[in-house]
Image (cartoon, rainbow over all chains, first blue to last red; front, side, top):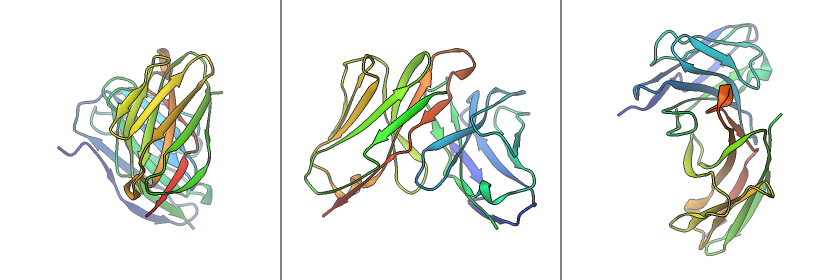
Length: 112
Length: 114
């Protein structure tokens, strides 16, 4: 009963490097989301997906890309990392819109 | 743009105290308001409120929504040190492409001292 699994848990990147944050869910949820949480703040939506092959931008999509080739996986790609992308990233999935929301344990990313 | 504002931003109390956390919102085509508790990692779900004036209760926690005045409160009675956490409020719009997207407030940091 894994739920939503995010890897890695921690990462340090240098400015200009790229990386992919992985997110996998085993609940057969159609909806998946990526949020970021800056210190002392709530979560802000980066991208979301309502099913395989369908993605759309959230509040803060600049500097990120996503893909959804399968129901289970929703990776988040950072191109040309910047210090402003230092944050904790949460992946989430839900059964039906706001119902049954499940968050992953987060990835703490530092860009130096 | 949807807006969610929580108050206070932080609160320090002693065990046994009762606290009230506030969440006001401005959102187009409101559907639901959700409360989460966050202790150092992922948020965990507390309540979802859709109808005005109906209290949701779970143990020492309760919450109510006022759709006319656009706010919700989360009450915690007889607080314990284990209640120390960040409490997040989020709103979701009805239907369309916004369905499922949560807009969060900045959170209230609650610290309960023994």
